[in-house]
Image (cartoon, rainbow, N blue to C red):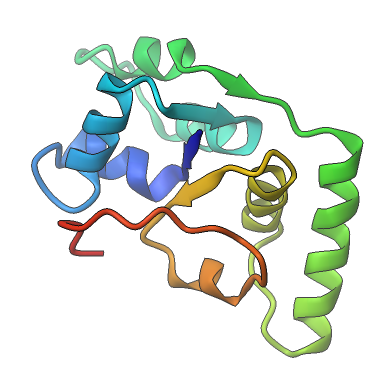
Length: 129
């Protein structure tokens, strides 16, 4: 499965024909997209009463749990990045760890995910990320 982070979902909701909007739509149609808790919380925080129904769509996407192993991995990744002097937001580390524990791929525009060793990033050929 592919996990889309908040940046990809925001593109899909606000600019469906630009950036990562098209791959999110394509992955939804192929039933290859899943949601993780951190992204769900971020999106619901930012969505106001959405007349397009995006909130219902987001809630309907298959959900991947963040288990104890993912939390442990997140702590280790965050510690290592901090020691290297290249920390990234803890929420993003948790997303990455959940993706890695489930052997998924991450669709994102955020370049700081590239600093996480072993994280598989989903590359969409037409994305102007």
